[in-house]
Image (tube, rainbow, N blue to C red; front, side, top):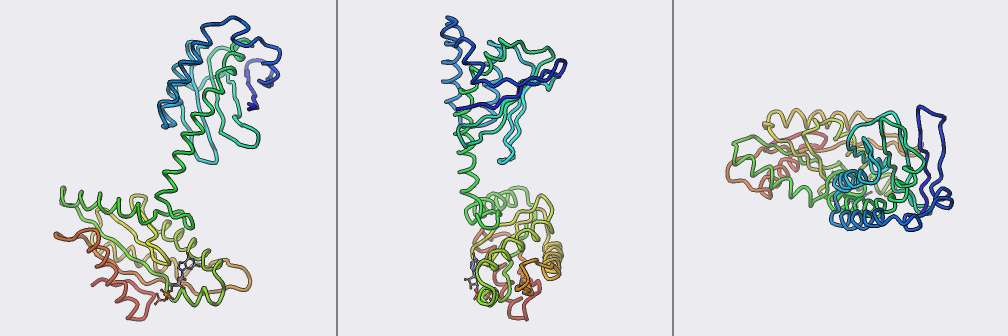
Amino acid sequence: MAYQSTPEQLSSKRKKVTPLESRRTAKSPTERGSAFLQELRLRISSLLQTTLDAERIVDYFYQEVQSAVAVDGLSYRHEVAAVEIRQGMREKHRAHYRLSTNEDYFGEIEFTRRHRFSENELIKLESLLDLFVYPMRNAMAYQEALRCAVTDPLTGVGNRLSLSNALRRELELCRRYDQQLSVLLMDIDRFKSVNDLYGHSVGDQILQSVAQITRRSLRDADSIYRMGGEEFLVLMANTSLADARLIGERIRVNIAQSDLDLGPEAKPDITVSIGAAEYQDGLNPDTLVQAADQAMYKAKRNGRNQVQVL
Ligand SMILES: Nc1nc2c(ncn2[C@@H]2O[C@H](COP(=O)(O)OP(=O)(O)OP(=O)(O)O)[C@@H](O)[C@H]2O)c(=O)[nH]1
């Protein structure tokens, strides 16, 4: 494992320390007879193995590192996974490490402090980094597995499993607090001929664009799911049927007017048929979706590219 490190002592000349090199010249904790560091390593190692929660790992590491080197702040960033976790304060002096093993990248960690780090302190911090890398890698892999379990891989919106969890939760809230809830069931028109004419990969791009345009047409509180095939469901809490219809109309227009860039050969006119339904006493997740489905079929029968209610 290699840490590409760039400790930045901002009040002094910027300096680069390569931990592997520094470890070669520095004595290891054992060589320095540091029973304390050995004990600390053991403690950190067993503590970090107790959780798969990235925030908790950063928190534990931040607390435990203090007994070796007092730091004012610690941050962990993984750009690809869009994770940023911070503990303590961000101060002037920083020791920044890129965490990687061969080709694998595990993010970046930064220790900060009001006072400059000594060379000996940097060596101590570096000697503890390997304890952080593997638990964090496991936590990130676990988060990714959880995310995949509820996400449609093609479009990035929620899948059927997350839809059924969300519907159950939202209907429970409606019953308990007497709130409104509406859904839109949306189906791309004549999608089979688009696939037949332009091929499946253009069809896939259209599915992605439709999901993106729909997402952009909604409030943050609304959520979108792919039911399967070319069918999407939009879930809107605290929304009446009249409002749902307006939102459905906005989505329909945005999709019909979108100029999808699918290469010189493909210029399909993409439209959607949408059915809107509102939660009423006695409905369950299945019957609510069925009501929206029937409204959507009404839109298909009436000529497609429109929003209908029952
Ligand atoms: N490219 C692509 N096509 C898909 C995917 N899932 C389902 N389809 C296609 O979507 C098409 C759906 O066709 P139909 O159910 O006959 O409906 P339609 O052609 O959209 O016609 P209407 O709904 O009546 O307007 C089928 O050809 C499926 O193969 C996918 O993930 N990618």
